[in-house]
Image (cartoon, rainbow, N blue to C red; front, top):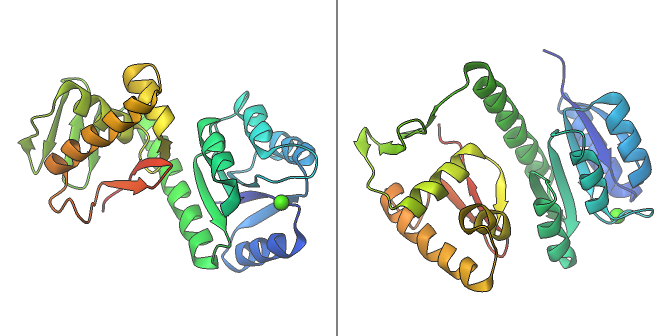
Length: 233
Ligand code: CA
């Protein structure tokens, strides 16, 4: 298999060097772009496996780069944002970014995010080959065709909303879903009280799904951002 090709979009040379050095020593190939215009161009001409995208770019907003790329490609985008850009990060995820890293980040975090994205890519590739109607994750099994879910081969008694939530999370396994994205999908709108309801439904779903709800195995909370279903071995 070819080494994965990563497009690094970052205008700050020290951060860019940290990323490219890490990629080089960990068996990745990479391309760099120092602004949004070049990023779009490189993405379309080299078809990278993953894009690492800084949100604060000199020529255009990183979110615009995502919208442009999403108009023709689903390739995974991990955004890099400063802590002060929390709202931008949420906007980026809503625009179609897959995951995020917050500056300052460690080499370990960067590699972990890349691994998760690669794993999701291979899961998705496997899913399209077999047109999976059953999702299996650790001891969890969701049978989309019959509309039921099982944990340890025991059927889970879920309410319609809990089941919808579980399907949405499982169909996007390893991807961070924002509160807005989830409520739009479940209720077709995103009002403040929908986000409050979402917390309640998520809590009841977890109670049924997680053996130890205090240290969740399946559903990760991203405070102020949303939720992610993790792939369990
Ligand atoms: Ca920047």
